[in-house]
Length: 191
Image: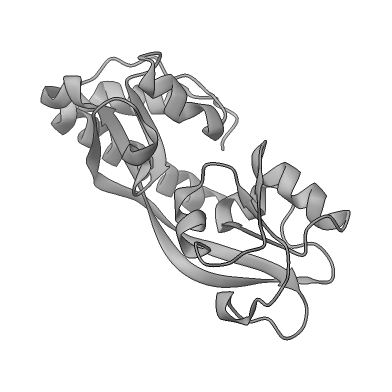
């Protein structure tokens, strides 16, 4: 976010009382890495993330953010999930919240490789609509021409820590809080 890489996160965690080695990885791989003990914590994942992990984990006590679940549809008559008729809707493979939201809808395509692939499929006409969070939408190019994004739900984002490190949760929360303060300071400088 500032060109400093992941050092500000490591520094915030150290100030909070933890020595961490931050690792960047695609969101689709995070649950697997946590399940297999390759990592011990995650900075930001949606509420309910623990259902994707085959290892006991604890949700941090600091909410990292709130994102909107967005239904991206052609400009026109669709203003929400209930207006879908026979449109083919792409969802991110493994995204529990979107699967739950569309549980009774028959025309769902589970898209591997995430929001970028969803956007490509939408632009090429292979999907009629996509369902993803607004952060992922913005970092993959935003709403394509001829489409609109309709908010359909709010999603809380938290940090997560392996349960075998439960004694470190207070320091983990403190580091998360300090890192969020750093992000706020970056945003204020950018205004």
